[in-house]
Amino acid sequence: YHCAALRYQGVPWDDAFTQTAAERIVAPRSRLAVDTMAMQVAADEIRATMTAAIAADRRDREERAAAYEREVLTVAASFPRMTQREQADFMEHMWKNVFFRYVCVKGGMESALGINDEVGREETFAAFKSVFPKHETTRFLTQTAPEISAQLRELASVVLGIRVFNRRTEELAGLGGNGPSRGSGRVPDPAPGYLNLGAKMREDLAGRAHSAARLCAQYRCVSSHQALRRDPGDELLARLADENNNRVAYWSIIRALIEDNAEGIERVDELARRVHDGCEEVRALIEDAGEGLGEGLGDGDAISRGGVRRDALYPILESVGADHSALLDEAAAQEVIHAVSARMTDFSKPFETSLTNELLHEGIRVEKMAKERYGPHAVVGVPKVDESKDVPKTVVEPHLSRKLGESGAEMTHGGVTTLEYGGYDVFALCKRRGLALPASMTAPDTAVVFQGKTYGFADEYGAKQFASQPAKYVRAMHATLFRMPELVRITHPSGEATARAFPNLDVSKLAAGMSVASPTEFGTQTDTHPVERHVDKDYEWNEWALRRRALHAANLLRKATHGSQTNSSHFRRENTTQVWLPKRNETQTVVTKGTTMPQKKRYIGGVRGAPD
Image (cartoon, rainbow, N blue to C red; front, side, top):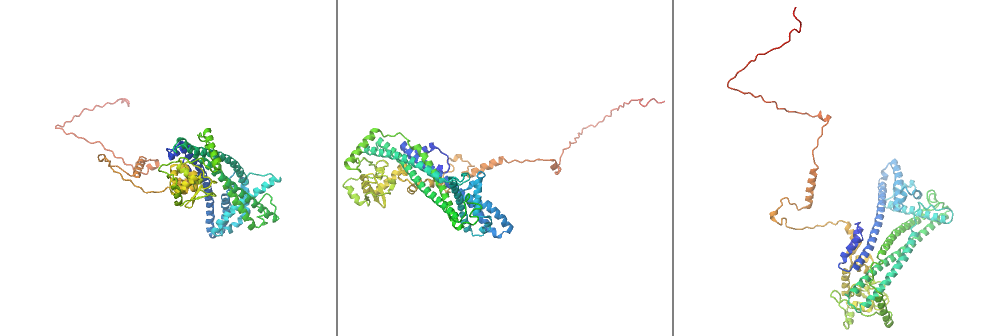
């Protein structure tokens, strides 16, 4: 069940993970107990996941419709303060982009908003325009907020009802040979497909349930016979009990699917009949008014021309639209049933049975002899039961009669339809190592009433043992269920019953608890420096402070000073350069002497010619 909660929240897993988790839950029990638990987890996981997805889609659609509704209410609140031009602009925008989109989203006709369903868009807009003309926008926005919200929902249902009526009219025209059905763009009719698939599943599930019930009866016969001469801890009896419980769990899941499928078929039949009757009432109103149907209701139809009274027509169309929406919800629920049914085919034959022809023939022979001798409700004998300290001790005469009168329990003589623990024998579950045996509904003295609850048993012996000390058996039953969790869903077939008795196994609550962060305060105390000579002066115990320090260091590595200079920036700044001139050095000696060297001069003569 924890696996189912994980999958419910979108955590990826596979069959191997399921098997491992189931092994941890029921360890160190047998492999068959693990397989039984895995089968129950798989069924609950598919149901929870698909149901959550359907609810999320519905919630998303409701939120988008609520956004349009809030926009309408916001405009309605400020509408009286607008000028006439602003009101005219808002009327066009609200009528086309808000009211029409709200109708499509709320009525589940969002395909009409796309580009791939032009026919559906035209039909939806025509129906919308006939019910809610543009000139009525001003009057609509002057109403109170509750009136606006209620009439918006009514508007969506009426437009959807018109589209359903148009589909019905087209179907009749196609069947009558007056014209072919366009098909594309029409709202789908989920009823025929639902009933067809429901009939197929009913036949398939009935066959699987019959096979599982017959196999469980064989296990019950062999186990009862072998328990006469074998101890409760015998390996064969333990194996037979685990195999029986596995098939009982499978049978329980299949029976729940059969019930859900039958209830769904009944509801769809009723909804389809109501849609049909509503369409016929609309047709009769239009014909009584002397109007022609043409291609159905829409722009320029009997509604727009005022040929039919709206106060008589709109409630019927609203009911038709609401019934069609309910049909779509039933179709989504059928997908869940079909998915669980398909998944259970993997568990139809999960193990190699320990039933041999020899064991089966011997058990059937002994049971037949007992019934021929002692009557149809006779049992083969009193089985050997568990006498450990964890279960109540077997009471024998004369103490049995005395305790029956003192326990406060009362034995009944049949006619009981609702039994505790799914109608399984409490005595066998407690005293025969968790063997799931169905209580007898016809044998006398096989039901016990204790503290307002009725418990069923397979035979009178087990009923008397329970009635002698019922409180102890109830406590032992709870201990058995905690020790063998695969029995929880067998003895509590519905999820509500499981949640009441074992809140920790409620998948939806587990998932809801995992999806919401629950703040808690906790603390721990340790020695700061276990070894004093290894004192770290920079020790930091706070993990968040360490993270801040690491982020600060990483941030510093990314910091650097950068500068750049361009021609423009060069002329806007003052640059100064400092140069160190060479030093002047002088040397003084004792004697100062000087030397004048002759200067020789050379020149070229006769350049200017000879003197004459």
